[in-house]
Image (cartoon, rainbow, N blue to C red; front, top):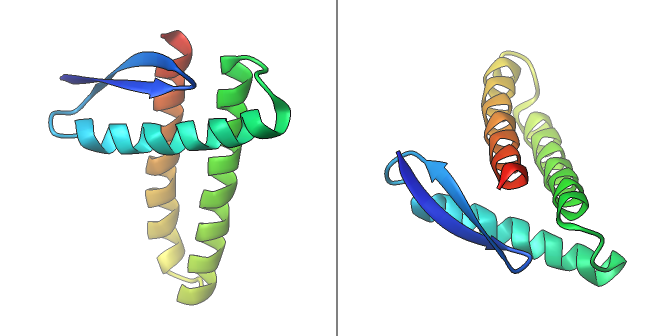
Length: 104
């Protein structure tokens, strides 16, 4: 298992990941940090955990909107099962990253 250090809200977190996924995890962390910085601009420094939960909710909302648009474009039906599985896998990955960040 590989490890990567990411920086969110000025704090470093060591994250375990699959070999070759370091760059991807870094890009995801950069996106989360962007969301956290946007929140700080709106609500101030309210604590890492609360900021990470709020950022996660924003990302989940974006994912839901994308899913809704995709579902509309595809027209529902048989594609829903595959999309549900893909989104479930993404949600599990996001939850695992958030859990690792909270335990760091």
